[in-house]
Image (tube, rainbow, N blue to C red; front, side, top):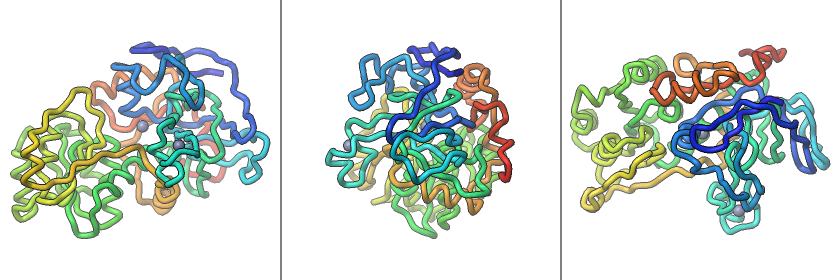
Amino acid sequence: MRAALYYGRQDLRLTSVPDPEAGPGDVKLRVLYNGICGSDLLEYFDGPVTTRDTPHPLTGVQNPVIMGHELCGEVVALGAGIEDLAVGTLVAVEPVETCGRCLHCGLGQYNHCPTLAIQGYNRAGGLAEYTVVKRRMTHPLPPGVSALQGALIEPLAIAWHTVNRCAVSAGQVVAIHGAGPIGAGAFLTLKRRGVEAIVVDPSPTRRAALAGLGARTVLDPNACDVVAAIRDLTGGRGADASIDAAGGAKAFAAMLHGTRVDGTAVVVAIHHEPVVIPPFDLLMPEVRLTGVALSVNAFPAVIAEMARGSYPLAGWVETIPFDGVIEQGIERLRRQEGMKIVVDVAGGAGERRPGERA
Ligand SMILES: [Zn+2]
Ligand SMILES: [Zn+2]
């Protein structure tokens, strides 16, 4: 089968590999769509970061590894012991395999499992015609949710968890720094929950995309003092919570300083460089600074929200052919072109599934 195999920094090869087989407890999928993510860019340009040159303790997988962790596929085969899933079912994949035995797995915080293996980095991923996942990694999609929508569940689950980490409620205000896919997903999630959002991004394309999704307050950080603007918009207080979905020092500082006293600052962006934080900037405002570890128990809720139409794709999601994964995908995202780029792995087959809208 065709697959995109990661060998190391700036070495992703479109090549042919043997088809995987479903072992006991496994589900074999024909991959329909697989999105490209900021973490894929980090791995490609700065890696190996998440992939390994030694065997992963849980899966034994090491480079080269098939990339891709934002995927939707159709069940084509079931391993021994799987009786609650039918061949032909469309599923979104939660791209984590966990040990199931450690303290965190026992507490339901499986996103903190120390031997967590991520699909597309520590086990074979979705940039391939077929992939094999554990049954518990699959989330069947209800009728009416398309394969393309299914490939967006993973990044939207990260956005969902990011919003949960903000610990805000309806009527409060969240500043989103960075209007890429996670920023867009966070905006739509906040909107659904009745939380006001202030969106900040230097890209006119991304600001327009967020305005198109319904964002009422969209700021250009190169055209205004963002922190002053956020304070003006919040009666001088600052945002109840702020999200760094941008990943630069400037956005990080704006996140911290635009948050109100006793508010929450949440980092979800991947930073390529360290950021210096004067501890005094945390001390007096008593801002809580925290992060986002993938997502936990978010897939069912996000799939339900997708089914009810909370996540329109217009203006921020585009598809590219498998052959274009580097030039039309990774390279363009590096230049900040496009927002969510999804690889049409099956050459349009995902759109042709009967009974579903594309
Ligand atoms: Zn991702
Ligand atoms: Zn564990």
